[in-house]
Length: 196
Image (cartoon, rainbow, N blue to C red):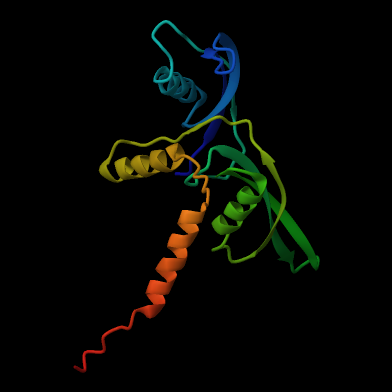
């Protein structure tokens, strides 16, 4: 059974980190559910973990999202909507036919979103093009897991990837020197042949 993703827009009080004051935020989230009722229940349950007991949320809109697939990536903190056009040749008319699908890809910027989209599409047998990638307003994604053992592994892995923090590498002279010394050590190493 394929997943149906619902985009839930909610309003709630949120601490503004810049000013330190509470403000009302209106943000969209994505949940995997089988009906609008379940989507409402799930988003309320998922958001309860982020709110104090005195806070409540108001669900302002729920709609079916048009994403074919959702792909989280490690060390990424934003979501991008990738439009992928699958190209097929119609033998009867002799023309190319394009069918569009939308992927939600996690990345840090548009270039990385493009690269991640290409890596997701790597196993595709037919031709395709990527005509558009835009940043999505989606704040977070909550997939459904049944609680069975293999699902627990999937939820653990999904949450690890989703919660990973982008790594910003800063090089300094000590690290560059260590890399040079390490590469020199590797080239000086002579493997044993066993003919001694």
